[in-house]
Image 1 (cartoon, rainbow, N blue to C red):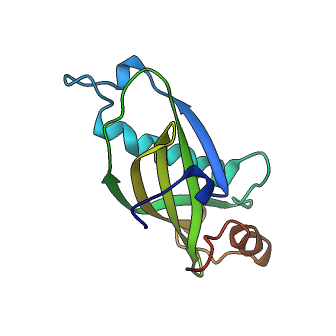
Image 2 (image 1 turned 90 degrees about the horizontal axis):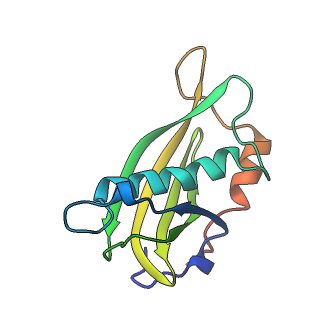
Amino acid sequence: MPDELAITDFPLRAKDKLRYGDTDRQGHVNNAVFSTFLETGRVELIYGHARKLAEPGTAFVLARLELDFRAELLWPGEVEIGTRIASIGRSSVRLEQAIFQGERCVASGLSVIVQMDEATRKARPFSEAVREQLAQLAAPAA
């Protein structure tokens, strides 16, 4: 992902509140909480009110998470999580995500989620309808 990111680079956005319990001994938000913020963005993608990507009999599982810390995140306040589709596979999707406090990008990450058949517990290909919804949230071509 580019060094300079703005929330406007992401077609899907979610917010989360910073909690006092998220802080550590140094007084900033603990690094483990950043993963939870990215999860908030993924859940909004899959189950958000505007779409429902999880079709009957399927679930999404996280297969990969790569996280780059860019700046200190301080309590109190909130964060905004940006999510966009980097690529779509047969049953998986690669996401680019970033966490912002105000205008400042504090972290960016790459996630891969896989659609799984709940009965067989194996990867299940996307339907054409889900593939179309994912394509609408794709990052612009570089």
